[in-house]
Image 1 (spheres, rainbow, N blue to C red):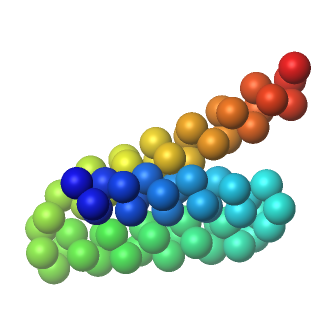
Image 2: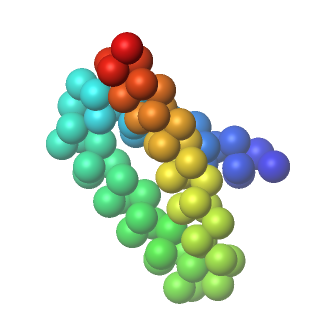
Length: 71
């Protein structure tokens, strides 16, 4: 449960960083993906679930940002 919150939070923080510092957010996303894929390779812990949780957090923030700027 705590890992879900952490991955979701990482996605939210990365999306917020994307608004001000796009390069930093791209680097953070790539590092997260590399870490998760490496962890999955060594532990076979189904990293796709962690990546999905990260993506959901990212998606929530970016959706709110886009909707806010359209209105």
